[in-house]
Length: 379
Image 1 (cartoon, rainbow, N blue to C red):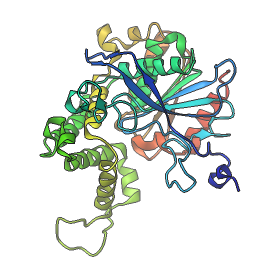
Image 2 (cartoon, rainbow, N blue to C red):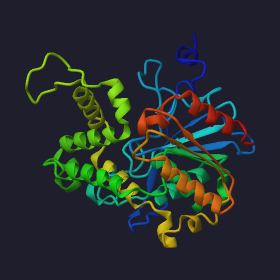
Image 3 (spheres, helix red, strand yellow):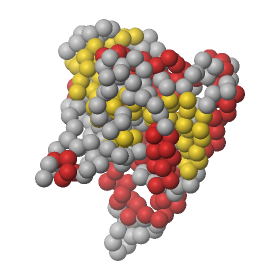
């Protein structure tokens, strides 16, 4: 039995990440400059002769370039959007050439705070500049150039990834045919920014943080990163989803202690430990800050419609009824601004119980919407 069949006929199979090196300096929106940088990425499917079938996947806060497939036949976990991408799946790799990229400032191969600064020969640490959604899109465009792709058939993203898809339509209108903005918003609400600040405070006040230069001390601000992840994870789920999965179930007989008593506590601690073992705290700080800063309407006196005036892409915007962190009302703001510019946009509000994480789930109705829209894209 072949590896791909052992994994599943609708899987992209065994995948291998690649790294693109850019020798030119990169000036960020903050004014910081990287003398050189790397972007780690993966591809699925085949680029056609016309190079017209490329689809870019933009990841969310804790996402990576590993969007689909597995690294070995024994790999326990597939890529984070594997249920969506593959042969005959909604984003069909028989038709599209799909690209996943780890954003600049990340901690999974692309140049980030844990990378070695070529000037000092030490990790960047606290000196790594603040990155923005605009910086990510600019670097993704450079990756497209590197791959010889003039325009994307579609740019797709959920949450923070959806913000990148929206930014693509504004920054490079001639290089994007379709934008799929899922469970996202044109900016963060004050409440969302508050959640991000609490998460950052948990990290920066950890005694092992050392001002962001913890690499030199051979430590990790694990306590702060664990708390940040717990807080974030709570906001990604709906109350109904948490209730259905855990309710008030006890882990064992009640002990009247501050140790793990309830299944929910056990789950949160497991997720926190797993995350702290594989994600970099400095990257987490920068990803949440990029979320805070994104607001394309700022340069237009708060007028999102004016910000989208130069957009030419066609849009699919999807929201989920139980998503209270990126609510349907926020998606409808994007839809209204697009309609104000008489742009073609399709909007779907999906009834789902999973909260913000619904965009990652293999919901039948949600996937049917994506399949229908993507099948009509000409390449």
